[in-house]
Length: 302
Image 1 (cartoon, helix red, strand yellow):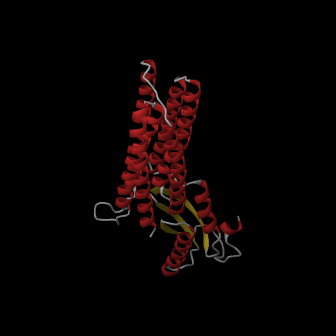
Image 2 (cartoon, helix red, strand yellow):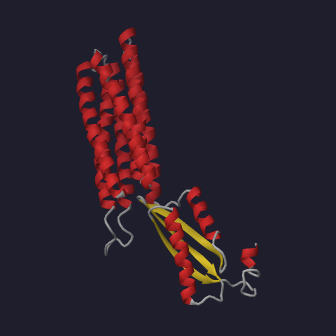
Image 3 (tube, one colour):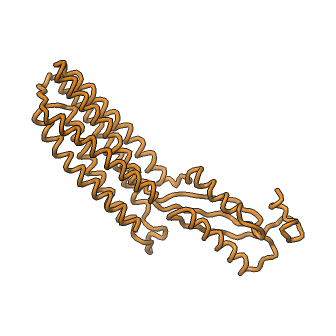
């Protein structure tokens, strides 16, 4: 169900961005505004990103197979990294093109339609980014979170374009169009860096957040004797899926069945508390000397 929700929201974002891109580019070409055109180019990238996200999420949802024993979750991280690189190029293009248009003194003729299109775009960007971020947080999808971050940056670029339209129309100074187009390009570059950092972290198997690791530790420490303790906790994330493994220290008096039941119980508690998680527990006998009771357990008394 979570996968279907992610795919639907990615498809919705792509369709909405396509409508916005067509409107802004058409309007920008008629008016000659680089602020509006740069926002339109940004919307084209939104279409590209959301479409790629749709297919990346679809691929990442495929179960593990003979060649990919850990599944296909990294498809989301790879897509995000590639998108960030493309967005960097577009950000630089917008900045260079804006400066070139200003130096060549290209004619800018704003109309009321420019203003309406950018206001509608502002509202759409807010709705799309909120929907993406909400779904991304609920499903743990870094791809949707990255997409939401880019749409959120559209709020600033669209606001800048609106300000450029108003200031240029009432002052006659085209430098405002240049300023806000360059600002939009810079915002796009910053957004690309944030998307790249988040996606590349998934590819490099960066550990889960402090909050999630602390939650895992509290669950393990909350278990009573004969669990003695744990060590070598390792975590990572691949797409929307989280992976956790650690060594569990169990009292030496447990037999194999009892130790397995203890590990299985802890795995179950972690899965209930944390969504989309795969847990592997390696059971070790506690080597501390005691009378093999909860009262005398050395590790529990620490």
